[in-house]
Length: 257
Ligand code: 6PG
Image (cartoon, rainbow, N blue to C red; front, side, top):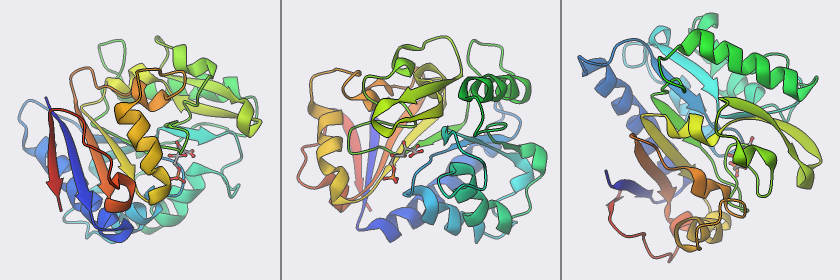
């Protein structure tokens, strides 16, 4: 399955494109007779997804049935849910407060801000309970990811312990450069997804994207290189500034939107 690279003109058109792309993904699942159950969507943290969340909040209920969508987070800062740094708070303000979604469909990290390991264990328990899954890792329909300028993704940062985790769904991860603990989905949990989509905009990410694609494989230095869906599709939803003049990787499908 070739990686899909879709390039939009600017951050606003990228967010609009990502909204429509996500709606199509949800509709595909609903039409697929072999796939049943709600659409399970893992949200990215940071600032890039905010506009996408705002646009999703404006989609009429007859196009997006939130009762049939389950939300979880790719990672969370270990802060209270009303902390300005909280990824949950970003999604609550830009999306959750504006849509009619059952509380049980919102799988946020339980009790962030206290002992990170306990929060990670509680999150993992919640995911197993709600997402089930016969295999080692529950299959998420779509994991949205951002990427930092150091090629981290979720809270899988260079040189951190979580990079080597290959059994757990989610772990606490000490990030020395930020002097903080994070809670993050692990690489194998991300890679078990049907779709994994990097949503990246801005010239500040151009160099990181070039290293992700073209630097020698070294996930300790470039953790986003760990993202390789086991059976699913990998997507890059970019704006032109993030792509810049970086050569495309081999054997990909590209769409200039
Ligand atoms: C987080 C994210 C992180 C983020 C990147 C990009 O909690 O910060 O999960 O991986 O996606 O750092 O962040 P921006 O979108 O703010 O550039």
